[in-house]
Length: 217
Image: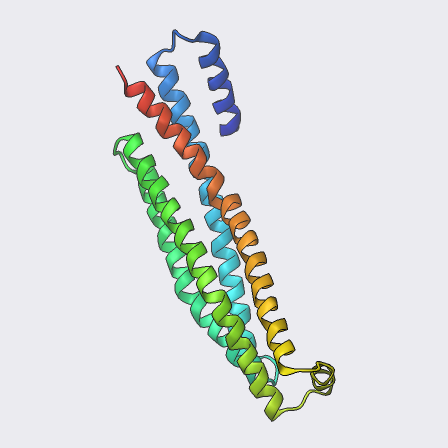
């Protein structure tokens, strides 16, 4: 069986070879093959994110309920797990919407534009929410760690803190730590979103442009 990507490349080569005498059937076959290929990759990306999110949520909630003895970690992981639940639901609903748009009988161009806009908005909000919650959770975790340290002394941590000459130096280190983690998270999240969705948004843009060109007189 011919892979969709191979079919797309073969049709594209034929179109280039026969240009400017492109038949309507060749153009339609190329566009439909390309559309199916992109949607197939998008679905696999969603499957990965759904499975990964479910596993992470179960792991976080399991630790919060039946894991270690430190209450600060249990609260932290429980909070993360609770936030992950609606995120999993959102990804599942988004996946169902993409599948629905990909299987309707509406004009291909209208479907592709809808899918492209949904994905672009999703990746934009995903990055914004991640960067909003990250510093809040870093401060939240530091606060829990401070309270935990007050209630249950950790000798290794106490020794490390005692070596810091001033409170301001400790605060400076903490601020720089937050800035570094935020920057690294931003870089990773951008790469992650591009790997799962960004490159296919670019392919959808190309397909939409080709459909627009074929509609031109």
